[in-house]
Length: 261
Length: 301
Image (cartoon, rainbow over all chains, first blue to last red; front, side, top):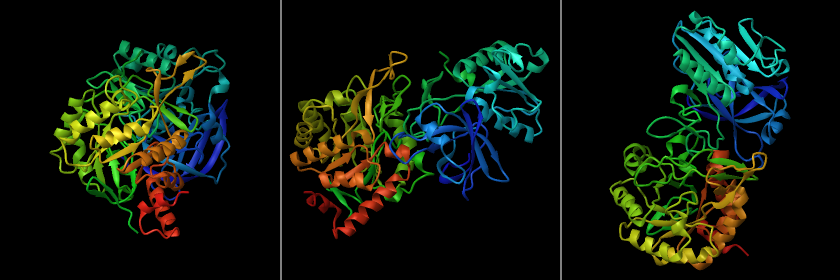
């Protein structure tokens, strides 16, 4: 696994990509990192004690040529509000890459990538990565209405299926309702990769159980250290130890190992 | 410059340690930090059997602090020895397991087991965890129990025994005196303060156990005051803990009477913090023309 590094990055861009969602791009400023889809970084947004903790963000792209890392975030509190005020050229305190990338990928399988809400980032990165390996994944992007669809490279690709709750764009309904319309053949030997709100992840997991296909989810939890030391970011799993750390055993999990409540 | 700290007949190379529960078993931070600037690594609490820890969510950020309820999640002493000690033994710093238990016998059994490990420098006795029903703070708030437990553990080891105090008492100096009377070689001052957060929108406790332990800069003035009070009350070294984010914060503790400090929550914010704290202490001592870091406490007016 790629070794985590703590470095001062430089912001390249920080722009609104849809309602309350931003895409930030930064260079590692000479530090060599090679994050994979599903991994995350933590950012210290301020040198003051408010907010205090670093914040975790899934990596939404990494360009090997330019060494630019991207992440998508939603303005939803003090830390992310401070982030929206950062400008190109500003330094950024980053630890990356952290956690496990998506696993379980099988060549030639029907890889179906599902994103909702702020979960677009890692799914777009995984989509790009799989394309790089010559795969042709299906990408299903869900949001409540059209204005929530982020203007991100990849999201507008013809291969992406858009689902909106109100039908203002693409398929009218949830991502799982869309998955139900897929022909059985497409679900043969399929694997689902999902990132988004927990109810969506749970619905994808249940769909995968019903269709007897693999399902991998990217989970979120409040995090303190981000490196496995504090045991704070626990989630419930099935097994001898009833908890796993999102930062170390995750954030990507086989959905069948997760204890869904 | 003499940066060393004497505790129970042994010597730590310097005054900067990392606090239990914030540094795992050390290896988690391997890629990120320079261990040579850390003089003592206080491990994640070790109990006799593995503990899964408390229900989730386990933490929430509060103004300049964190409220946590981890519940001593740890691998248990056998796996600690087998899986964690090999890495820890290779570090240049003193390795001090934080020992916890539900009963005096459990604390004793953990120490007996660890006595066989050559890489263990000493023990920090956790009588101050606020997030478990038995043991932890239930011991640490009663001076009689603290003295009895320390006496009992004193017989099990010649290694330095450091009692970690809880701030959740009327007079922390009473507890420190009890630890000293029981034979403790030092006291760590302090563990987290009991706190509570309520989600107003959901009208619900944020943490399933309702309360958690508050750490971070929010508690620093409490830690400094308690370090001063304890330092006035006992003759054994005091290790100051609570909200240290930079060298000035650490110097507050050292000036208040601490012989050493531990960085806790600050490690989460900036893993390289200990290096900066260490360098800042050295610079300050040089500027003050001190030949010994232990002379800092003589300077406060």
